[in-house]
Every structure is written in C-alpha cells, then in structure tokens.
Image (cartoon, rainbow, N blue to C red):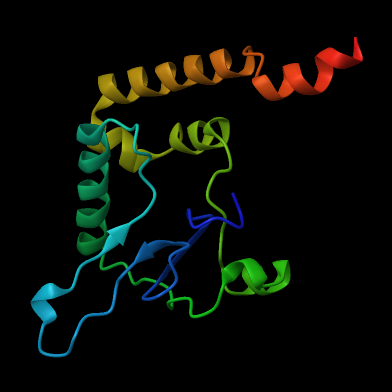
Length: 148
C-alpha cells in the first residue's frame, strides 16, 4: 500500500526502505559486511517454498547474466505515472488475487516448485482468495450495518 514502508514497486536502492530490494550501505574496507534485503516475502509465507523460489530466481539471474536496472535514488511514490513508465518501473501485485494471476503463468515458479507442488499451491491460493472474498469484514459491519 503506497505511503507505508512496505514495497509497492519493483525497484532496488541502497537507502530507500520502500524498495523491493535494498542493499544497505557498508563501510569501505568491510565489504564482507555487505548484505541484500528482499522485502517481498510475507511473514506468514511458507519459508521453504519462498526460499526455494528466491534461490531459483537468483540462480536463473546468474545463469542468464541478467542485468538489474539502475537503482532508484528518489521516492518512487512521488514520480509521475509517465516517469515510472519511461523508466520501466512496475507495481507489485496489489492483492492476493493479482499475485495468483501472475504466479499461475510463471515458468520459474513452476520449475522451482515442481509440477505437483505448483498446482497445489495455486489451487490453495485460489481457495484462500475465494474465502477472503466471502468474508464480511469489521469495516463492512461498521460502515453498512447502521444503514439498514
């Protein structure tokens, strides 16, 4: 959600905490202290599946010699839509539904999890989306029930 420190865009930086990937600064001469922060996994995720896919994505990037885009140095939330489009800055999925729609077509995800786990994962996430859609939230009760 824009305005919070959680990542919203597919970007990386050394300082901004709202980017998807952050590479914090380190002191010269202490290169071994360098680290990378991937800020997308949900704390409620299955870490075994998440780490498998993260590792597979990293290995794929090494294998294909993928080149990252330039780092972002400004707050992406302040950039115009045209500027984001010009720089190729894409948004992360805004909901579980959107994430599942992207995931179902991912060859990397299918390859790294294996066919059986991939199919089960997508099916379970669709069930989760349907259950969430059918839930009456506290917001809805407080907002709409008094109108009845």
